[in-house]
Length: 151
Image (cartoon, rainbow, N blue to C red; front, side):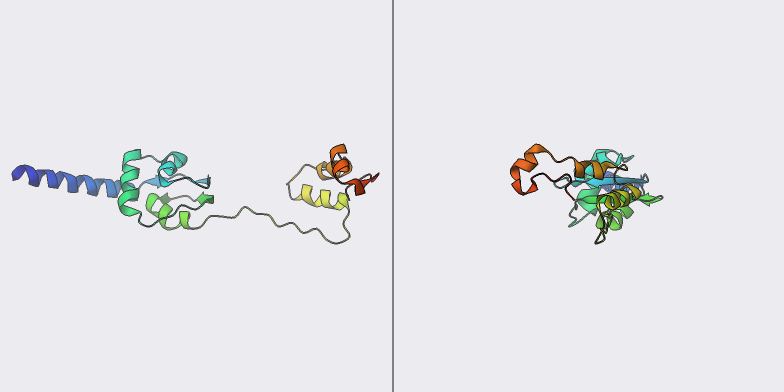
């Protein structure tokens, strides 16, 4: 009987240690991407967490209930713990989308300037692509005929 009570005490002590260590584990400030099909077990490696993978697995098994990992881009801010990661960060993927408006009347040079100004492409890249019509494209779309640009 003494053996079983000692064993139960050790299991409870180990459980308390794992939960305390897991909840207070710091997560480094970083941006990371979760791709479709990735699981919680892959998250430990992606974040380079300072706890053992087995402890992370125990934490997710017992403390993270009914959690679905969504594909997206996530940002971990300074002073984030593992508990905060699941409560706040992994529920809100951040958007890195950029809205571009092409105004009526713009030509390829105006569009190129706007795209280059936002940093999406090097200056002149859009114009170069619009002016170089491949022969296969002209063959596929005969109405292009002898046009010099795709404007």
